Structures are given as structure tokens and as C-alpha cells.
Image (cartoon, rainbow, N blue to C red; front, side):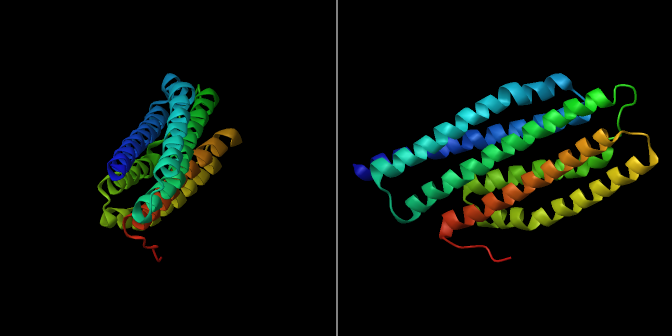
Length: 219
């Protein structure tokens, strides 16, 4: 009976984790879409609506993990999973914060560049790769797929390269065009936040490896 109740509780925790993972992807995708469309309303939705829900989901998942540990006193892999989920939950919430930051900087860019729309195509590769690595991380977690987790870890290097290239492009544009320093700074911050999402996906992928078989990834 106790094993049945533990498995039921673990199933609820996993369902809750899937919810917050999906919500973080929605926030990230919407903040990126709003950036390329210069859509103030969509960015505001990320900041005022989606972020609030993210905070709610984070609290619910953490409480479920702690409750399951306290009531059922799991051992071995089950305990490893629950303790790592608390850490993963925190990283997912931080992704929501990054998406909110991208949305905030987008609103700033809209205000700064009312007269002359910005060229943003140079950021499409980094944005697309960030969304892809997030989705791959989600699949690795839900499927407990160590190969996909390792792919997430290894693909982080590509995101770092795309970040470097994007920063060089922004710096070059800033020197040639009449954009303000505030515009330059906001673009750099958006680039950094996209890259940071990749770092967090990598962290979670390493946690997945530990959950599945207790291994620690060696770089």
C-alpha cells in the first residue's frame, strides 16, 4: 500500500514538473516572438500574466516534492529524483525570469526606436537554437533519455558561439549607426539572457543524468 501511495505521489510530482516545463517554454517562445514582432502587448503579457503563473507553479511543485519526501520517506532513486527536482524547479523558474527580462528589454527597445525600426534578423539563429535546446531538455527529462540529455550539454557550446557572434554584430552596428547606447545595452542584455537559458538547460540535463543513473557528467 505504501509503495502504491508513493508511486501515485511521484506521478503527481512528474505531472506538475511537466506543467512548469511547458509553461517556461511558452514564456520563452512568447518573449522571443514579441521581440521579433516588436509587440508591446505580447511582452506585457509575459511580464504581468505568464510570470505570475510561473511563480505559482514553482511553489506548487516545491511543496509537492517536500510533502512527498516528508510523508513517504523515499529511498535511493526516488529520493534522488525528488531532491534534484527541487533544484530543477528553481532553474525552470529562473528561465521564466529570463523570459520576463527579455520582454522588459523589448518594451524598452520599442520605446527607444519608434522612428527607426531595428534590424533583428541577426538574432534569429540564437533565438531558434535556444528554443530547440529547451525543447530537447524537456524531452530528455520526460523520457529519462540520457542520450538527449548529453546532446543538450554538448549543444550548449553552439549557443555560446552564437552569443559571441551576436554580440560582435551588435557592437559593429553600434559603431556604424546612430542607435543610442541604451539600445545597444538592451540588445546585449537580451543576447545574454538567451545564452543563459542555454546554461540552465545544460544544468538540468546534467541533473537528468544524475536522476536516471546517479552519474555525474564529465566535461
